[in-house]
Image 1 (spheres, each protein chain N blue to C red):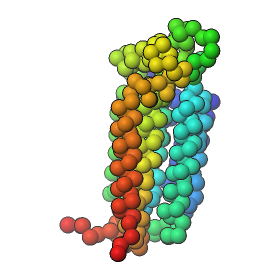
Image 2: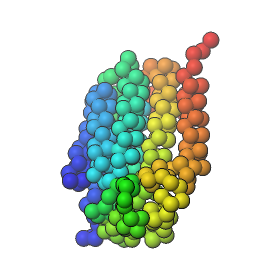
Image 3: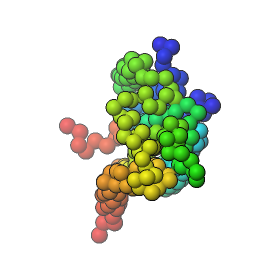
Image 4: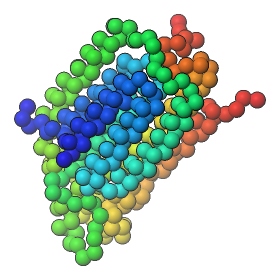
Amino acid sequence: MNNMPLAYGLAMILFAVGLYGVVCKKNAVKIIISLLIMENAVNLFILLIGYRKDGIAPVMVKGQEASEFASMAVDPLAQAIVITSIVIGLSIVALMIAIAIRLYDRYKTFDTSKMKDLKG
Amino acid sequence: MIELILFFKIIAAIIAIESKNLLSAIVSLGAVGFALAIIMVFLNAPDVAIVQVLVEVVLLVILVRATLHRDLTDLKGKREFFVKVFGIVAVGAFFLGIAWGLISLPVFGSFPETAVSVAVPSEWYLAHGLRQTGISNIVTAVLLDYRAYDTLGEVTVLFSAILGAVVILRKKR
């Protein structure tokens, strides 16, 4: 177990906190908040995977050798993917909040256990 | 340093989930997101940190708009006992599986060895990015040149999600 880094484990604890909220909470807004916490944790984990100790940001400055830069910079691919993921997460939240507002207008509550129209 | 901010994030997340007031839960979620932006600065990812701060502000505005004039009190009834036990068991099983997987990962901070098959394109971008695209910021080069179709798909998802939100929230005549 001594091989497991603390930062990875803490990111996964954050994910587990979000998972607990999604499974055990009744309030629709609380469920959305828990999903956002899970998304945060996954983005952070991808960035941690691409980190290089004592590295530099993947932005070249003037007069820098390409080979020296390539041996020092952190992973640019993980950062590009995380930017995409963050922006998509925002649009998904807008959609989820729109559905939650609609449900509130209809049932006058955010309580998911009171929304029984489709219950079999 | 990163671990310290991560502890702060976990505490803020627990407050966000267990708080009785929806508005304070949203503010705690903002603390989680801005702490992530600070961690990104420590991880040498300035572009991602800028995007994270921007998105977090818009997201808090959306969430506060959704809950401000609605019921701000917590729901009285508790979940059934079985659901709570099932939730804790599911989280525990997940965490055991994750711990088993994390042991086989390389040490934190050793980027080229982290994932052998995945790290090959990253190193290619770093070594040839400036010569092939003429962009000194390699993240932007990946986003808008090497993987431009990915960005096109992202914009498509963004467009359709916002379209769906507008359709759901339209006024009934």
